[in-house]
Image 1: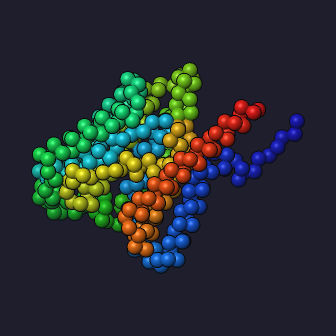
Image 2: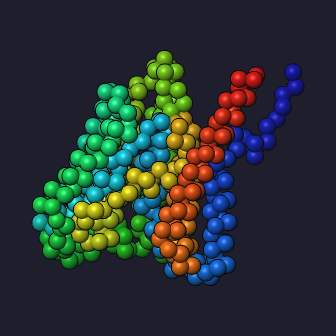
Image 3: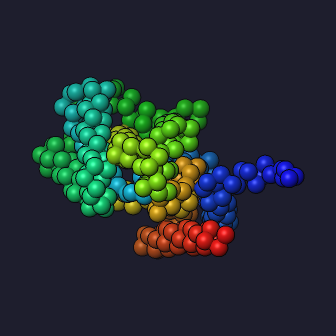
Amino acid sequence: MENKRVSPVRRFFAIRGMASAMIAFAALIVIYVAFGFKAPNMFSKANILNLLRSMSKYLIIGVGQSYLLITGNIDLSIGAVVAMSAMISATLMSTGTGILLSALIALVCCLIVGVINGFLVGKCKLPPFIATLGTMFVARGIGYMVNGNRNTNAISSGIGKEAADGFQNFFYYGKTLGVYNTFLVAVVIFIVFFFLLSKTRTGRHIYAIGSNVDAAKLSGVNVFLTTTKAYMVSAFCAFAVGLILCAQAGMGNMEAGNMYEMYGVAAGVIGGVSPLGGTGLLLGTFAGAAVWQTLENGLNMIGAQVGLQRIVIGVIVVFSVLLDVVVRNGALAKRRNK
C-alpha cells in the first residue's frame, strides 16, 4: 500500500484539543481588535500590562480546574482554598511570622484539602460536586476562623514595611523586564503544569481517566492516586492565587477567592477543555483566561454594566460547552457508523 504523508499542519491540528485552543486564540484576537476600535486605550502599553496581570489569577486557577475537568471531575472548593491560603499566610505574617514559613504553612494546609478531595472522590467514590461542595464550606470556614472572623491587619504590621514591600512587589506590584511579576509567576506555573500534563505518565493517566475510567483501570492506572494528584494540583494553584491576592491587598480578606471556582471552569471551557473529561490542552486554558479577561477589560472600557459583563461571559461558557457536546456526539456517531 502507498504511504500517505500527512502534512505538518494536519498533524498539528490532530493533537487532542489543539483545534479548540487555536479557535480560542483566534477569538481572542478578534475580541481584542473589536474592542480596540471602540476604545483605542485597549492598545495602550499600560492597559496591556494591566490586562496580563489581571488575567494571571484566572490562568493559574484555570490550570488547576483544567486538570480536574480533563479527569471528568470538578473542584468547587478551589475558591475557598484561595481564601484559606490568603487568610492563613496574611494572619501569620501580620503577627510577625516570616514570609517563607507563613507561605509554607498555608501551602501544607491547602494541599491537605487537595488530598481530602482526592480521597473522597477517588477512594470513597463520592460525586465530585458533593465532595468538593463540602470541602468548600470547610475551607471557607477555616478562612473565617483563622483570624477570629475578621480580616487581618496589614502584613507590614507584623513583618515590617521592607519585608512586606518585597513580598507585594514579588507577587503583584513589581516588574521584571517591564512585565508585572504576577504574570511571570503565572507563566512559570503554567509551563510547569503544561509539561507535567503533556510529557509525563501522570498526564497520560489523567487523560485516560477522563476518556474512560473503566478502561483506565484495566490498563493498570491507579485512579485514586491520579485523581488525588489532580486535586493537589488544584490546591497548589489555589494556594498561589491566595498569595497573589494577599500581596495585592497587603492583608488577608475573608471573601478572597469568591466565585473563583467558576472563573477556573470558564477559563478551561472557553479554551476547549471538555467538562465531560478526556479532552483539552492547557494551551487552551491560557487562551480561555485571556479571552475572559479581555472581555472584562473591553466591556469596562466601553462602559458596559457589570450585569452585562456576566451575561456575556455566561453565554460564551454555555456556547463552548454546547459546541463540545456537538463535536463529541458527531465523533461518536462516526465511530458507530464505521
